[in-house]
Image 1 (cartoon, helix red, strand yellow):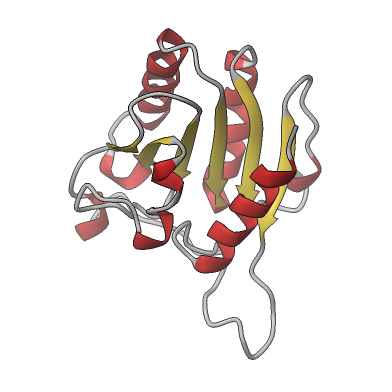
Image 2 (cartoon, one colour):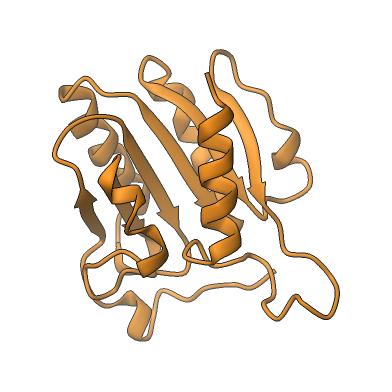
Length: 165
């Protein structure tokens, strides 16, 4: 699994990038790779912003990653909206750990390339789904974890959201 550094160009920019709707349900993205450096979501997420508030938490850009995620969730709690948390790779454990603290508003934790045991996690009153995984073979050109802007991640997210109650 790829490791991401808190140094270099991905550590530049805002720690949290807000996009999408001003109200309504939210997606909180916990990104260990630091995409959205220029304060815009990856282009593959544009349509999701039409339906959701999106808070993209860029871990390499933050000196207080968990606190930033908690601040985002507290802001959304004040707005009284439902939240789905999306996390990738090494950030999956943080998503699983923080979700129960906000169980009154978090509906699901949606994972991309979690460690084997994280994908089987069960939380009281919070759904946990693996929405995308890297795969071996000629078509897999990216080491795990898949970037959250990858089309397979977005397709898995949309598909999973459509089937959730």
